[in-house]
Length: 111
View (cartoon, rainbow, N blue to C red):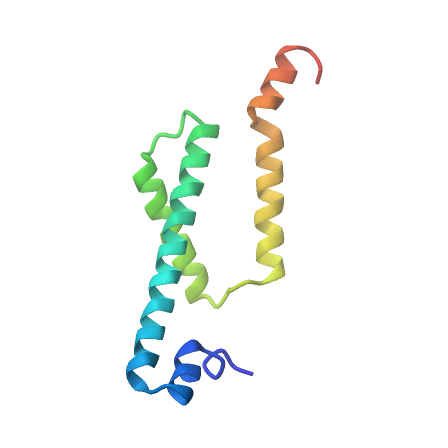
């Protein structure tokens, strides 16, 4: 089944009318925009806290994350397992290589 057939707009259009379907579609779009914005801001805050020597501001980093998410969406990647796995591997390697806990263990000679 295609994503257009199962969208909120089509469902609401079939069972409630055009006005409510448009409100539902607008709410879905606003939800997606708000979710991606919060995710990008959170990711840039996390990255800025972990790497204090990043030469760009958090605002610019957030915009760059949003552009990257937009490019991925335009390329057709939605919620694939390979994209999720790649993000997880990057995050795991990044976290364990430069995390404050790693630095503390290294300074104490425990690692």
